[in-house]
Image 1: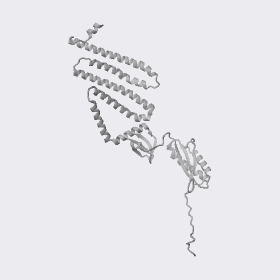
Image 2 (image 1 turned 180 degrees about the vertical axis):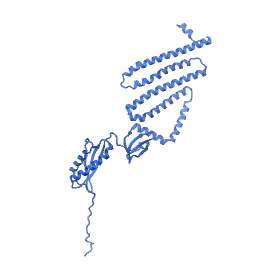
Image 3 (image 1 turned 90 degrees about the horizontal axis):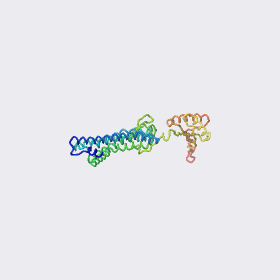
Image 4 (image 1 turned 120 degrees about the vertical axis):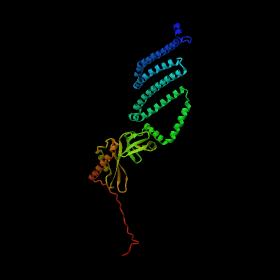
Length: 362
């Protein structure tokens, strides 16, 4: 065995063809060894890896294993090819170019493996943690940011391998980013605010919100602005930074139910208890009003010309509030008329007193 290795070992005293034949044979053996190693990796991933993944409840590890198996085998083969070429006594320039190309290929494969694993992780996060809607809004942006990060990292490693000055490149990128940030600070502020809105989720697409005097349904949440369709069919485009710095009311959160209110005044001579009972009965007769929580009527205060009552009721959807209020008002008007409960007009009583001291004498 030792004599065989001795004859196969390259020697500078060997003839030219014999020397290169031995070198090529050793490189071929390295390539073959790494090819067998890649097959072993394939068996391990398909057999052992699959069995290990079967012990977990989620299928995330199965999907990651399936997507990285092919590139992992290719990486092992390319690593063997890199070592086989690097050891050959080629001309310095040829050897450097060949080894450099294979190094770039290996880095590319590693980047692909990292991207595929990260892509499955982001999909799992978007589907199970953030929800389908947040996944549709946030995940494309996060995927782009992660892709840029991976590509930049691979580029820096490659440049470092070829002895390029990374510090000057990073400095140039930093100065350029600062200049862009100062020139587009408002746009960047809106983009950061949009990302904050997607993460914090104070409202979702389809929710009805009130911002100051504006009320509308959220149509889209973009990076720069949020689009809202008003109740009067107008289209509002509001910068995200303004939304982040404003106090708004989300009418659709935590659920679609909303509480309505009807104010009414009755005459001072009317029976308040009877009026409150009629108000509750009237509200229960409206289809849009929920039976639970039950409507409630309260005697709120003494007005100048009426006893002021308020009826509170719940509807299943905030879009039904106006219709329910209209039906309750119409029914209350008829009900109070049928039960002789007066709804007074605003009145003033003016008393004139005759001044007997300065009055003219007839």
